[in-house]
Image (cartoon, rainbow, N blue to C red; front, side, top):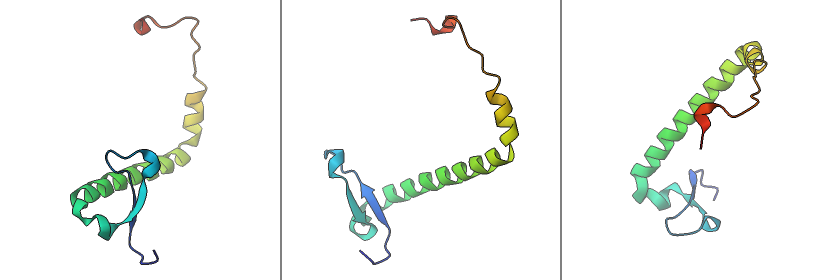
Length: 82
């Protein structure tokens, strides 16, 4: 499908996951609102992920310091009953 058109891996309702298919955007244009919502959410996740990776490289020493403050419990905390 060398058209350069965006493709989506679609999980159709009532079909199992092993029947997900790649669909070109023009074939699923009836779902334009859902596609826009998906793209909006996906863009936010990408921006958030990029910001986290950028700050984690900057604060690498701080994160190592936080990891070393691990405390091992001898028994389950009281708020975890049940």
